[in-house]
Length: 346
Image (cartoon, rainbow, N blue to C red):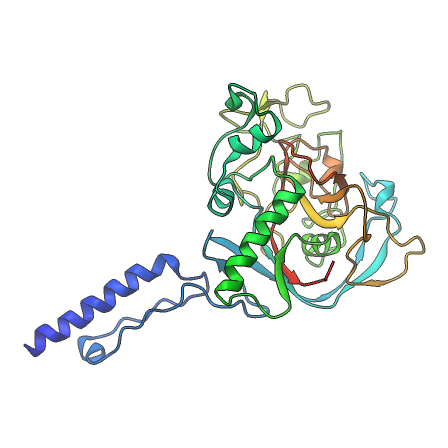
């Protein structure tokens, strides 16, 4: 009888571990093996599926499986010099920026699968918001794949996604004090993209040989010059892009995380899909003065976007490159990345 009791306890413990394993965060430790003698009399407790994020440590949003990487507080020089290949005037003047508090940023942009779990809609439904009378919307969307970057998302909808994450996390006591899920500010985005570098990309300088021809981007980004490489299935015509690095007829958003990450473990910071930022679009300090925790203008007509995309010029896939769209815009190359960042009150 005693032997059967011991075996029963071990089996229950094993089943509990097997049930919980897929739901534990990325940082959860694998339980050590135990003998029947060690297991005897042990209480099997149900662990929480996720714990409150700890400063400086990565974690996973278990609801959607999104890995969040810690970004330390620090300082950097924002913008680019006129001598940088691909430089645009809206990247001037360069100015020192200090981010006084650390934050977290998604390892990848939000995927189609993650979007569906949180918002309950898919890529086709997003397209139909733009063209509700289209009888065959599949003709106008790319590949449907849960691991491909989500797009056709407006700024308002990206923020609504973050609101839903906050509601769930707040209800379960998983929000660190003074933090919320949101879009990164432009300063947070560029600081995280650079990951301590000062060159045009986080992989080094960028030699631009043509509008869509910059071989240095190949290891780190899908952009207009290489988006047709190995691409199969529904997509968009890219054959006529001028000065294209590689031949090919079609391209589109890709599965996330296929290119090399930067030093802080972030993938697709450049290329794949443009990424919404929280700021209203505006100019940099005209005198190049140092700023602390900038959050952009208090009002405006368009919001900032960063990173370039699978359809972009090489010049757009630089750490300092900037773009903008009105809040309601949706495009085939525009998505977003989630931050867990200090509340600004804006």
